[in-house]
Length: 88
Image (tube, rainbow, N blue to C red; front, side, top):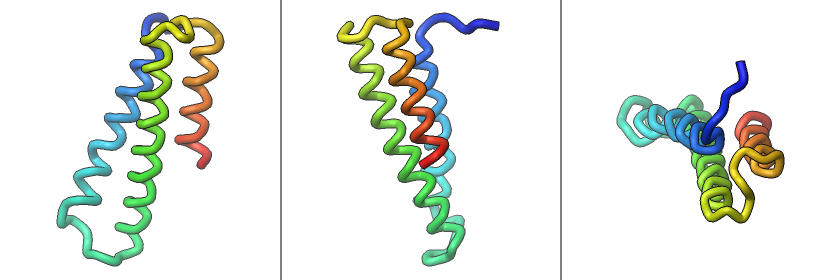
């Protein structure tokens, strides 16, 4: 099924949804300080926040009509953000 609409905005919201539980875990007192699991989750959280920034920047480029919504060039920005979230 082909999804239409604001794909870039959906990507931004899904990354934001990913950062929320990581924010709760890393800033809360759920894990002991200095533990390996806290260090790993903090690194994942920092990567998700960086991907969230780039996704927000991509949405700004599309919203200001520098790149038109739904075109191949706007989707390339989307896929590069997802690639950086998954593989880096």
